[in-house]
Length: 320
Image 1 (cartoon, rainbow, N blue to C red):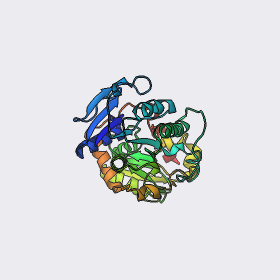
Image 2 (tube, rainbow, N blue to C red):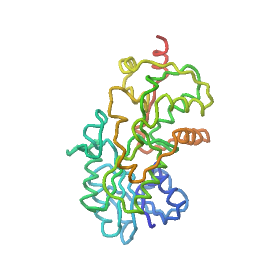
Image 3 (cartoon, rainbow, N blue to C red):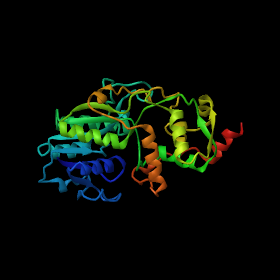
Image 4 (cartoon, rainbow, N blue to C red):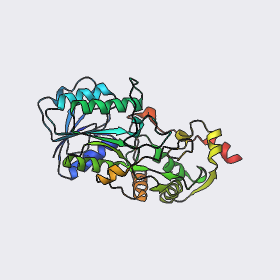
């Protein structure tokens, strides 16, 4: 398969390129050249999807996977230019495109934002519509939930792994039985490549099944793979929400009770379309192996970096 990847140097895009090359695909990466290069073996085209896509002119591909479209006008520019020269367009969207998420459970039939806002969720929803308008019936929309795995640039799972590696008494927001719903970037990448080969189109929630993992399970695995030096102090969720500013940013991945839809995303359609997920332990262990080997978070979208709970805030919670 002749594949064009828009992005392709950071996290999900990097995994798409690596997996495609391993499968024997002919891969071209179009990016700005600001965050390093793609994995070796891929051809490179430099440009800016917001203003200069001249490097794409006069070329054809079987499929495109777009990992970094956030605004309708940018996606319209690329899909419009490529519509007559590619057969399939895989667009990485987000469950944030749903107007009610994460405040309520959602399925693919739930309404998405329909506004002119350029905020993340409305922007993704508008970008989906732009892609479909340019290439009707040829677009796969992968509405990803929370993505984890090696090379994660937002740093949610890496923050927990680094904190638990420090050891000592550690705040753990309860309850440990809370349900999680995540996806490893490598599984998302592989599914999108399969979908491109098979011509799968339409909108899918690209995420594990609800309740596929538990919060306490993730933390126990993370403690184990980082050396087992941390000691959890489970804190009532009501207290965390009352005393911690931006509690999900401070304690990333936590199934926070005030967001009942966060991990309640219907995932049956993607499963029927072949999405398969590796065990949570593998994702956590591989992410720690990457970090322990010197892996660093890329600076792309660093403004969204998970700050984690500050040492001062953690000490205050542990004192009482």
